[in-house]
Length: 58
Image (cartoon, rainbow, N blue to C red; front, side, top):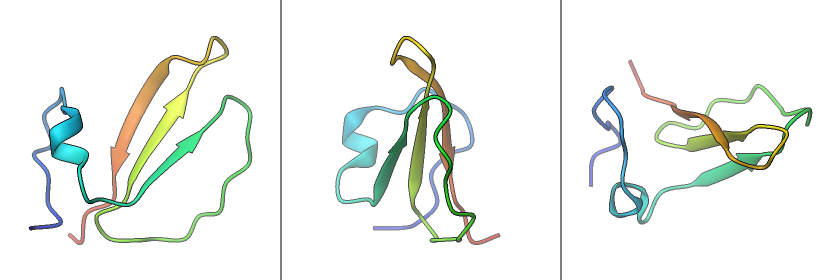
């Protein structure tokens, strides 16, 4: 499996299978460490997905 996902969304759950994922609730503090291929899902105040970020190597 490659660490690169297409920059265009939407992603499906299948695209995320086997990847490191972190979910960030609204207002939470997170570390700024870089993990290639990790997917970060940011939630809004209602607990819905606000943004999805994939950490790519390049």
